[in-house]
View 1 (cartoon, helix red, strand yellow):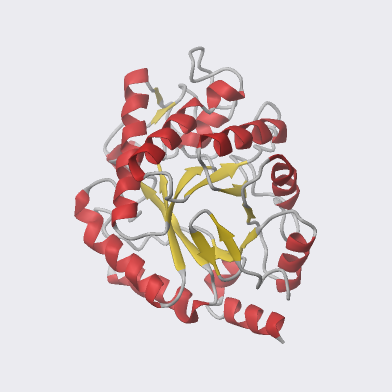
View 2 (cartoon, one colour; view 1 turned 90 degrees about the horizontal axis):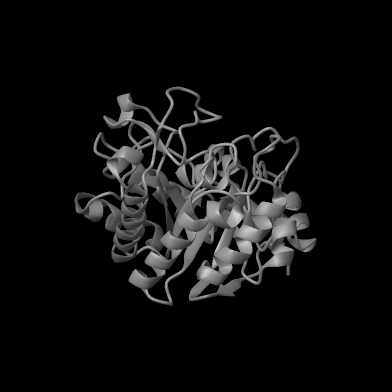
Length: 329
């Protein structure tokens, strides 16, 4: 049996193969972040036939000031619940599991988008977005954001999704706490890697407490910043160990602020390989993978347990079908 079509049983999540469609923003929500028929149709098309074992739904904002862009999906209030249920049901009827990614933009947004001044761990412009200097979060505000993540995760579970993913990559708020490029705090939420992931651990603890011990929690980690003075792979290994201890069940490895300029396929696989050696939970990797044999090689070499194929599936909804059929011959 090929590596990609081998099933994976892990922590109350049964996956028919190792192929995952990772979160990719569609900008198809309505102005309030509610799910539209365009979104339903999009995910229906991508999950048709059940060839993809798992789809991780695009990042959705946990509170209004954390909205990253126009027409981004929301998990910020109960008005979105009917749409969330319909989306989960649509993907499930096609034989695919569904996980919802939840996020807060932090400094990676603007007042024009949210109606609020952007916030961040420290008053440092976002390295990817630039723009206005954000307002440094108070401890009270941090605690409030932690609660917003918990409330969003409760909605995700109640809507029928198979798990929830905490977004800590690509320059959004939790990545901003993780990175010394943007976290200059002198209190318990800054300093070394253990201070910079305190908010992550608080969010994980609150979600686990609210959803019970059997509900799958994913975390997408921006493993390095690829910039001097930023997050290192050593930081990410230490963080990953703590995330596992706190109750994360699957790590989804990607890049941080400046992690998008790698050549070739599977360009984050060296990062996932180092992290996989340090943890006992499954590790997923994405990053330019578009050839089925490249995916096979990453799994065969033990660099990851799950393969995220994004743009190839975005451009060809039959990519998964053709890949599985090729490997099944």
